[in-house]
Length: 328
Image 1 (cartoon, rainbow, N blue to C red):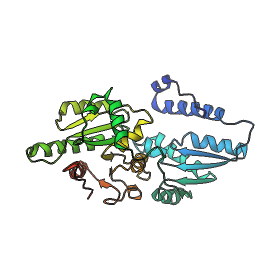
Image 2 (cartoon, one colour; image 1 turned 90 degrees about the horizontal axis):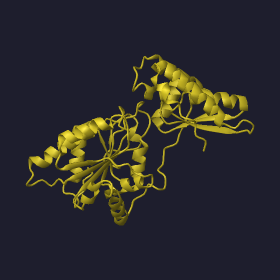
Image 3 (spheres, rainbow, N blue to C red; image 1 turned 120 degrees about the vertical axis):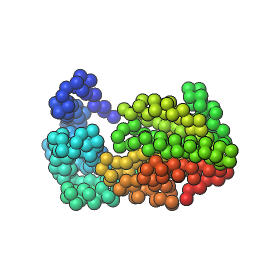
Image 4 (spheres, one colour; image 1 turned 60 degrees about the vertical axis):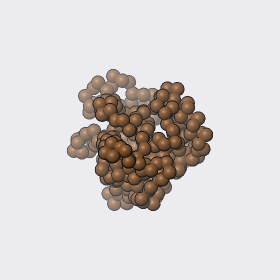
């Protein structure tokens, strides 16, 4: 594995458009330096995004060296960029143009959904076969002993895990804390869950919840402060930093997984749901165009549109917990 040298931090202080150009030139230089100079490669497989400057750079290298470029389309770079910039911004326009031109010039391509395959064919004339993601072998169901061992280990740094018993529901969500994963939807749903428990506390069959949120990102601190202000009594939050080998076990140890990924293009699928399925974890996922290719509502998971629907799913699932699980 050859790692490309990170762009110097000082580049981020430049005006946005200039920083984008400098960053691209830096990446082009070190990407070319990381490729074989004298030996011949028959194929180069590149996963995109990021597509710029990767696609133009590798197309140039393949043209010079006589190699074939194969593109693995997981999403579009220009739609991700448009989360931070207006769609009419020059950087978005240029990125989309370059992505289309050099995507068309690749020797072959595949993608992760039928919806993306249709979009590539209709709008860019790119023929891409569909290959669905599959979870690695480490994402598997675990025994109760493995679950207890993980919670005991995590409790040394996060004491809240020591309070988990058979009557505590564990909900897990992995988020990037960014615009395309609105954590506010889950938070609002859990506030409604708290209200439902308090509304009829004497007869409520809703259990207390431990909500495990993994991942890091720019909006994390904002929401953590919001959670502290709410002061929920029946819903506790913990945001552990998990080692690579502990993440699959954490998914398999939970009772319900929630996916907030909406996709910048609406055409890719969340790998986190694939991983959850591999662990045998029931999943509730927010609706977007291509999601139905992975999650069949009421069959292998639940799909929701807003916090109201998500709260209903959570309440239904944890009512009478642990003796009753209701997926309908």
